[in-house]
Image (cartoon, rainbow, N blue to C red; front, side):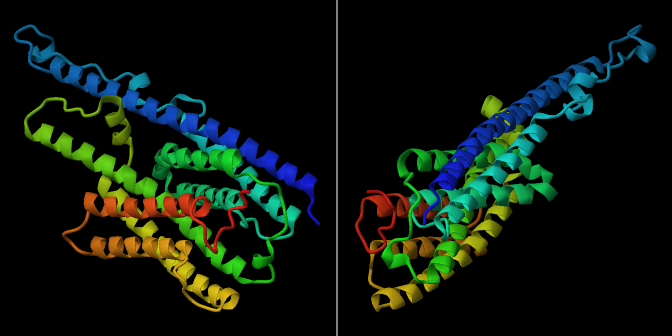
Length: 348
């Protein structure tokens, strides 16, 4: 029996989580903007000190050299060192509370329906976005430099959750008969959720890698041309200066996509086994099966290309983003427009 009251509490928890994620997104964005502004001020202060340190001739101070003033504490010290909570610390804390509510909302949906919380598009979206958020927070606890990616991780999570709450939300209900009495719904779809979540996280990192690599290339060209204070993309460029280098982002993207590829592999394998039990065949060229295989092929090509010395950097990143595009198509268009045996979106 469905506990509709608990399902409503679950929905409320997810809505509050969205509100907290919005606040966290603002905090992470403010942290990036504030840091870029401080770095810009430090550059200007450094240029002024360099000009002041030029010999001023006879009588120009002690030894004829003007002594440069040290940078003010307001410019040189970060916000946390000046006292008070930094925007990043605030955003990380709020996002952690939001993630707790997010996970609680997913768990309450499972308890209310007495089944796994991923039987339709709404539940798949809320569960996979929770996995992305928890993964980001766990990685960021030990590697604090990854918190600078918070704006770019929370953005896609919010889009996915808002789409779920706006377009895909359905009342809590029992499983459809075709999904009942099978343990493969726990294994096959559970692995697919993990694969999707890692693909989202990997796409964010790959996209930032492309932007950072372009930014670094242009800056290097300006330095080589002898520009005194090279800049690129203005404030956006200052934000990219805050992120890890493109080489580090590429390595992180490769590690995430390596695990995602393993998950997509088992998604295909477990799906084939379940199809044999449910429909009497391992493979039937169903649209969902075909597009999952396309995703697997693209990520396999990415990993193979990334292992090849001449196919790294931006070209490999574009291939990773092509894989994510296939994931989005598989999750949206295939689920809602193309009819097939996997039409379990829950939308009427």
